[in-house]
Image 1 (tube, rainbow, N blue to C red):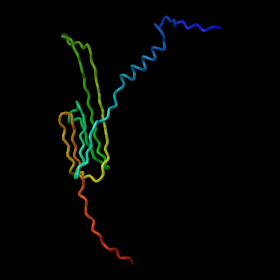
Image 2 (image 1 turned 30 degrees about the vertical axis):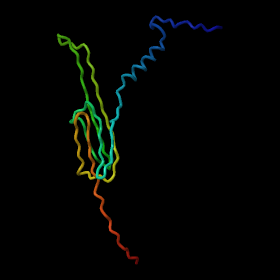
Image 3 (image 1 turned 180 degrees about the vertical axis):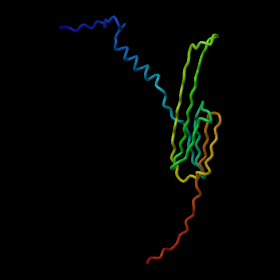
Image 4 (image 1 turned 135 degrees about the horizontal axis):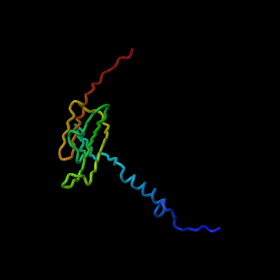
Length: 144
């Protein structure tokens, strides 16, 4: 018995039904929200660490900084509603986007009370001063 490779003929589908699932998978992953990370530069100076983090399109009030358990956490959230309307106010096209980014940086020996941050033109600058090293004096220990 020979297998005939004729195109699939079904009145409910035009073409091959497997194409429906292939297109569904492609559309699903193309429309999946991006999981983006924060691009940054970390530098160590003599008395501090500095971080320059890119957060384009974010507003300062939507950025959160926290230093806990020797870890700096930068978090940002933004959402945009884009509407296109005609002269009568009917919506012809509407899109919503939401971005949620988070990144953590481990540091040791940081003076938590002196951390400073600024945000300008989509760039977050954080300075983490190092704790002053206490000089340890040597002492003789008596053995009993």
